[in-house]
Image 1 (tube, helix red, strand yellow):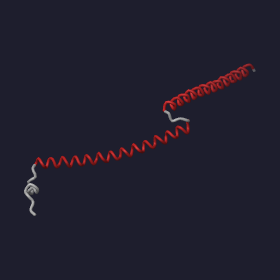
Image 2 (image 1 turned 180 degrees about the horizontal axis):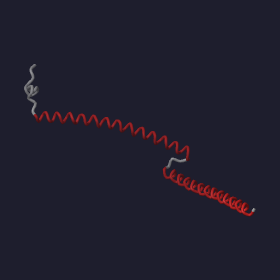
Image 3 (image 1 turned 180 degrees about the vertical axis):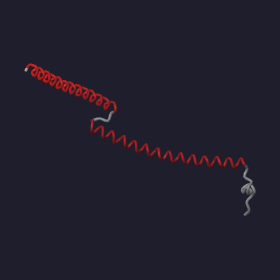
Image 4 (image 1 turned 90 degrees about the horizontal axis):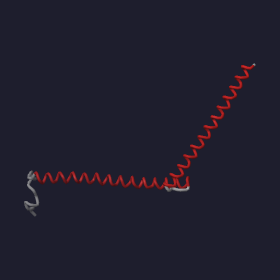
Length: 115
């Protein structure tokens, strides 16, 4: 059965307009494929991040008794204040030792001069 002229374009007679549409279609197909690949990658990343978040929540619950962000921030602030207090106490203790050693050095020097 013979095809009509409308169904089969003559060789080399594709109009520039049709060729431009065909080229644009090919670009759009490539863009779609790229976007689909990005979508799949993004969905995989989201799933991985959700799993990591759940793991971290469980770890926070186990280690600190809560996974609530506000409560964790409050606990962190408490621990920072406690660390600052302990460092200040340690600093005072070290200074006390230095002061006492200074006194011993002065007494030793005085005794040496008195002898």
